[in-house]
Image 1 (cartoon, rainbow over the protein chains, first blue to last red):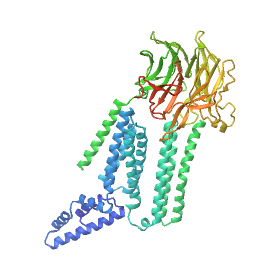
Image 2: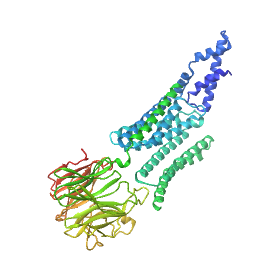
Image 3: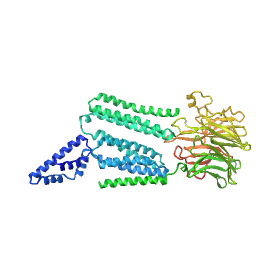
Image 4: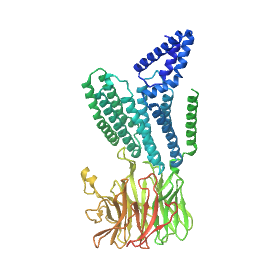
Length: 294
Length: 342
C-alpha cells in the first residue's frame, strides 16, 4: 500500500465522526479508489510517482473532502457543534460579566468551567482527535457541559430583569441544543449495525437519556435548594452525585448486555433506572436529616 | 492550524481579562446592601426615623421639617430596629453584625438628633432584634432577645431563635428578663403603658404537644401582662384567619391592623396586604390593595396608618417605599425617603 495514499486518506478520515469500524472501511475504500486512479494514470503513460501525485491532486483537498464526507454522513452535525460551542462561550463571558458588574459577584470558578467545556467542544469539533472514541468523549463532554450550563441557568435567574430573561433564554437554547446533540450522537449518528437499528435498542437509549435528563434536573434543583438555604455542610453535597454516577454505570452495562445479545437482562437493568430519582430523593432526605442530627 | 492557535490564544486572553476584572470590580458582600430598608418608626411629632444603606453602611435619617442624618455605622454592621422617642428629638436603635454568627452581640445606641451625639446605652452578648417603648413607661426600654443563632436543619438558613422579652431600666441601668418562653420566633413587639402589658406576635403553640400540632400552629398576637408575664393571653381573632405577621394596635383598641397573605402573584410569590379587624363589629376589612408586600404597619399620632411596601419581595435586594393612609381608606400618599424605590 502506498504510504503517501495512507497519509492522505488519514487526513480525510480524520475530519469525520465515524466509529473505528466505519473509519477502517472508509479508509480502505478511499485508498482503493486512489490506487485505481493512480493505476489509470500509469496506464496513460505517467510514472508511478507522477500517477500517485495526479490521483491525490484530482481527488481534491484532503480536509475539504473530509468535511464534505462528514456533512454527507452526518448532516449539520459539525455546524451544530460549532454553534453550540460559540454560543456557550459568548454566553459564559456575558453572564460572568453581568454577574460581576450588575450584582458585584465574582463567579470565576463557573467562568473557568464554562470556558473549559465550551472550548473543549469547539476544539474537538475543529480538530478531531483520532485516538479518542469520539462519540463517547463527545457525549461525556456534552453531559458535563449541560451540568455546567445548568448551574449557569441558576446564575442567570439570580440576575435582575432584563438580564435574567436574556441570559435565561440564551442558556435554555444552549441546553436544548446540547440535549439534541446527545440524542443525535447516541441514536442517529451511529453505524447501522444490527444492534443499533433495532427498535428495542433505540427505545432503551431514549429511556436512559430521558432518565438522565430527569436526574440532572433533579440534582441541580436540590443543589440550588441547598445553596439557597444552607450555610454549612457543603462537603456532604458529593452524595447528590451518586445517582447520576450509578445511572451512567447502569446505562453502560445495558449497552454491553445488548451487544452480547442478552436482551432481557438489559431490560431489567433499564428498569433499574426508574429507581434513580427515588435514590436521589432518599439521599437528599438523608443529607438533610443527617445534618439536622449533628 | 494557525486559526486554531489564534482561537485558543483569544480564549485564554479573554478569560484572563475576565478573571482579572473580577479582582477590581467584585463588591464585598458587606458593601452590596443599598437603599431603604423596612426599619422605621414614627414619632408623635410626625418625624420619621428610618434606616437606609449607602454602599453597605447602615445609615439612619430622620425626616421632620428637614432631613437629618442621625447615625451611620461601618458596612459590617446592620441596624435591626429603631425607636423614636416622644418629641422626635431622640431615638434608640440596635445594631449587630451584618453577618451574624452564634457569637454575635448587639449594641443599643441612644442618639440625640439635635446635638448630633450617638452614645452606647448598653451592650449584650446576644442578638437583639427589636426595641419598643411607650409613653406610659418612659424609663423602660423593652427588647426581644434571641437565645441562640442557629439552623435546625442544613436546608434552613441560620436565624435567631429561642426568643424572650427583656426590659432595660434606663435610669437604674438594670436589665430584667420578662418572659421565660424561649420561643422559636417572636416579632412585632409593642408596649402599652396604660394597660401595663406588652403585645407580641408568635406561634400559637402554647397548648401544642405533638409535632403535627406544632407544625399546624398559626401565628397569633399575644398580650403579656407585665405583672404576670408567665400568663400570655391570645388576642381574639376569627378562627378562619390565617397566619398573622406584623401588626399595629389602634390605641383605643377598637381595631387591630395586621399583615397577612392575601394571595399569590403570577410568579407564585405571596402577596401580603394589611387588614383591619374591628372587635366591635367583628368584621375584617382589607386596607391595602398594593398586590405586593405591604408590611410594618405603624399607627401614627396623626391618626394615619404608615406602612412599607417591598416591590422586590423574595428578590435579592428589597425595594421599599413608605406609604401613609387614612384608616377609612380615603387617601393614600407616598412618603418620599432617601434610597426608596422610584
